[in-house]
Image (tube, rainbow, N blue to C red):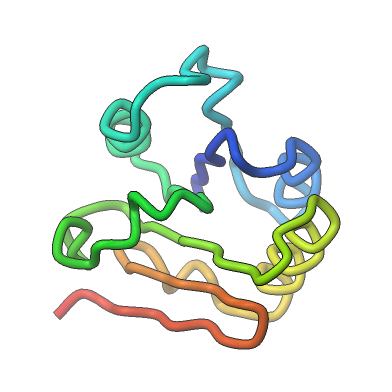
Amino acid sequence: MKIKLDENLPFRLVGILSELGHEIDTIPQEGLKGCNDEQVWEAAQRSGRFLITQDLNFSNINLFKPGTHYGLLLIRLRDPGRNALLNRIQTIFEIEEVERWQGCFVVVTDHKIRVRYPK
């Protein structure tokens, strides 16, 4: 899966997700650190990448309707420390069939994964 990591996620995820067979790029690597959400979203779409973020500005399913983009994973942990984020995302990518999430709107919490598939 081609993935773009937002700047609000630990850089160590690049290595973890790469080892699991994914092609990763990040907002900071592209020189987009500090850019607005629209620019981040456009960069993900231009490169055909599934965006992973913690940014609540991406939480509106009406704006990010499944099937109109390459996929979006919004991670919402109660205590989003670096290790908690690394562990939760790594676990999800190890046990779930994330390739099926292309074009989906996905919300991950401490105990749930909600996937909205395109209609």
